Structure formats: C-alpha cells, structure tokens
Amino acid sequence: MLLAAGRGERMRPLTDQCPKPLLVVAGKPLIVWHLQRLAAAGFTEAVINLSWLGEQIASALGDGSRHGVSIAYSREPWPALETGGGIFNALPMLGSEPFLLVNGDVFTDIDFSALRLAAGDLGQLVLVPNPEHNLKGDFWLHGGRVVETGGERLTYSGIALLRPELLAGAPGGAFPLLPWLNRAREAGRLGAQKHAGRWLDIGTPQRLAQLDAELKGVGG
Image (cartoon, rainbow, N blue to C red; front, side, top):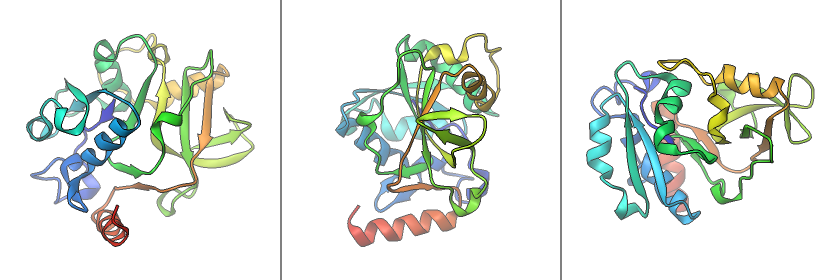
C-alpha cells in the first residue's frame, strides 16, 4: 500500500494545485519511483489511497500497467483519514495476508523484497538514522525488536510490513497509526530493522530540490 492521501502542508505552495506524490524529481513523479522499484522487487499489485487532489494521481497512473504493477485506488474523503484510518479503510482491498506499507513522500534505495515479518509479529518496521528534522527519533531498536526504552533510538522510515490484524478492533474513521504500533510493541509483537542506505523524507521544497540535484548528479 502506498500512502498518497495527504496534502503536504510543508510543501505548499507546490501542493496547492498538484498532489505531493506527483511532484517531479529527476524527471519522474515521486510515486513513480516507488512503483518502478516495487515492480523490480517482484510486487505486482498496489493499493494507493487518495484524498487531496487524488483524481490527478489516478489519472496520471491509470491501472499501473505501464509501471509494471496493477493499481487499485482506495478513495477517502477530505480531510483524509490519517495513516491508521487510511490503512483500515483499504483493508478490504489488501486482503488477509501481510502487506508492505510505503509512505509516498519518502525516497529510498531499500530492497523491498528483502523485508521479512517474523511469525507472530504484527509488524516489521524499517528504521533509519535520525535526520536533522527528527533528531529525537521515534522508536528504540534492540536485538531486532522495537522496545520501550534502551538500544538505539531511530526514526521510522514510513516503510513497514504489516499484518491486517494490527488494526483489529480499530474504530474506523480518521485515526493515527502510532497507537496501534505501540500496542503491538507492548505485546512483544513488533520487530524492526535499520536501513543505513539512502533515505530522505521529502517534506519540504528544499528537500525536494536537494534530491532532484542528487539524482541528476548520479543518474538515479
């Protein structure tokens, strides 16, 4: 599932008329970079949630065939349903098996096919070294587990393998994902791994320009 419903407030005014996932970097919309890398990793089906200017995304990507995947769209009202609510709303499309979750406004070189979810776990998070805009980090990682405290403090990358059961009992509507991840952690059912390669949260026009320059310099 690719998360693509938000407005991207920090990216304004660029996102006033163009949805954030369609912002172009090195000649391709951000979301197309994801789709092509997912296809290269062997993924054949994707669900994309839509809200802010979402029909522009649907029109641009179509059924996904030219990018090597089959796309289904999970449409949300505006304001959008937040991360937890967006996932919960899309569960009928995602099915009963674990699924990969990717935030549409990050850029990474991670090998999506290498992620594994341990038996009994509800989620496997990809964590990254803390960027300048999140120096306090989000989660503690120790021995491949997300723990309450201790170990290494890292930032959630916006990428995870999740089981639908993670949201069992969710109320529907708009709600964040974090409380449900914390509930899984408290139950000892949340794993994680550190990705030390390329990762960037494309949260501002400056970071978008930075990535554009980097990719043009190294040819992607």
